[in-house]
Amino acid sequence: MNGHGVRTRVAVLVTLVVGIASWVLWQLVTGEGRLVPRPSWLAAVLLVGMAAFVAGWAWPVRSYLAGRSTKRLDPLRAARVVVLAQAATLTGAAAVGWYAGQLLVVAGELSLVANQDRLWRLAVLVAAGLVLAAAGLVAQSWCRVDPRDDND
Image 1: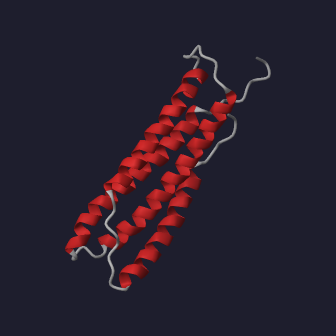
Image 2: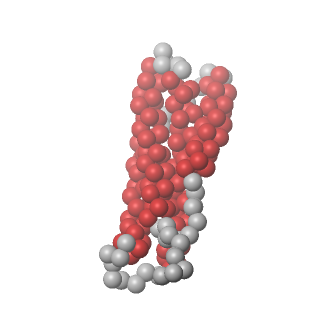
Image 3: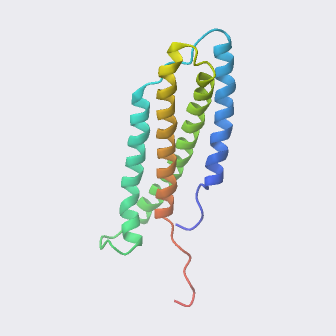
């Protein structure tokens, strides 16, 4: 697939915008005396699972483009994999921002015992979001077709 797909710069911008919005929202919520909700471990499992799914779907495209697969590759499937990889990149970036905003709010109030448990959970969720964003970026690169030389 020609083109650059979702660039790292765009993913970082999404992370920053969502992260600032998350931080502002949770500052307002906790300013009223409430706690950031306790995040679920299931969310981290789902983010990492989605990363594995994206990589698994992109691998056959990579193998075909590298000449290691004799099976014919359906171009529509390859295009769908690229779109899936782009969506994973943006979803992972948004998840990183969302959970990082909460992490910053919780880190500012570690005197509350309840926030100490939340800190580690949120850190794991930020890492899981990074895994998904990275899987999307890698999958996009696996699906990239270099422009042909007209002399070939």
